[in-house]
Image (cartoon, rainbow, N blue to C red; front, side):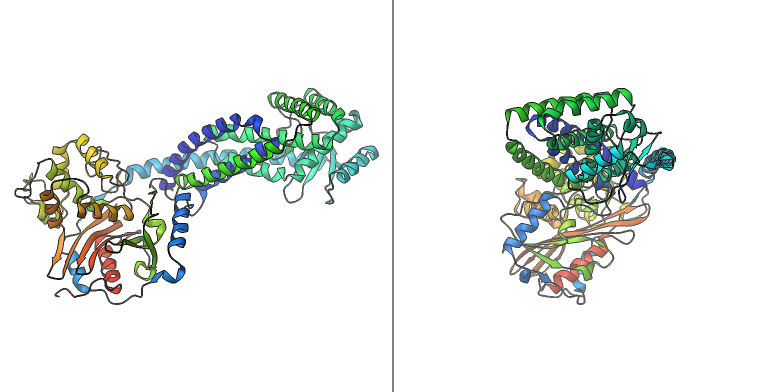
Length: 609
């Protein structure tokens, strides 16, 4: 609940921006679209409002294009399926030469904030449902007072309208003294209700126009749309932008319904239809039943509808064809769908605090591999890049491009920044321990680059950052393009379940950049960093790697193992990330990597036991 509260709050902030942009664009297209298409543009918007409540993370356009690219570059027969075999114990032992030591961070403050946000939202939802229930109870009393339409003239007009609109379904129609406006309500069993005064005092033309209007609501499933509007009004009670947008949608619904009625009328009846709307507005006040589609609305809405009738009348007189408007409307609808689909992952509460890396792989050869047997109860991914053949092997494309905290794997680059700035050097990287007692004995001593990397000593890299300064760190992170490049110095260990995030794909890409020194850094500094993460070296093989563990409230929730293997037949870069409620740590990520590399026959020789 706490996590949902924070992510839903973030989603609502983004929705405010998107709603404003959507309304602005919609108004700019107002005269270029038909009334019905203006209304139809709201349906992609409603779809966007469902995203924060989906139990899964929607697929963005970039991911879809990526899958299409995969289909073009490889057939299903090319996909690899790796079978579990005993892991190569050598690489697992080598990975353990770097201690996977991690401090636990507390999620208490975000949890309290998130929990309070969620409680406030739920309280608002409760009150909204309470008011809807009161309205429903009041309408039930109106329904109990209603009687089937008895007036023979009115029933004949109703049957004529059904025939005119070619509606064969029987829709019950009632009259009541407790309604102020004609309306239709009910999703599974729609019913029309007319004020008894309107039936007795209104003209035959007024009655026909009102019935045509309500039946057009039925034809276009507006009672169901009205139900959706009420659902989202409850869920987004705290978002004024969404509320305003939903009110605009209701206005567009009535204008679209008026246009559908005008299509059934002759030009000489347009003015009479407008007069009927004015008469209803003058004699009867709008009925406050939010779940009903009613003919009479507010005076502001009425002005827009009368203007629509006048515009429609002028268009009919000029015999102007609306075909160009239909084409424009279809194009606009498609554009809105594509844009909202592309933005949908950003609104998901399942990943609102994580970034989605836009992976451009048009020139790369990608194969999907099935490693579900290795990951068992973990979520996550494995990415392998064969440098010699420029080939990628990816397990779980969704998580491979999803950014999460790098934890201690970031120390590879933090050390490089310190070397580049001359804070430490390959010959002299010793930093003095300040006598602060840490929970790991290996941390309570002076450290050089190799020991700090081996034991994953947080204070060593925090000291490097202090001497570098925030501006320099941000400049370096931006220069190498590290993940989301979000460095917040409010938390010294910003790489540890905090602001900085990176995806497994980016981890591999950065390792290749480090290997080839595409950063343009000093060669001796690159060599020093490589040396600090070397796990094993022999005549035929060299293994480099770094673990990382995200520990929150004492639970290991995010585990990394990244690195590369230099073999006689080429160099392979890899990144494994696992996530879960417990035991998702760097050690287990290294174990998965050992098994995968062994079973893919990338490790051609055993390490010594």
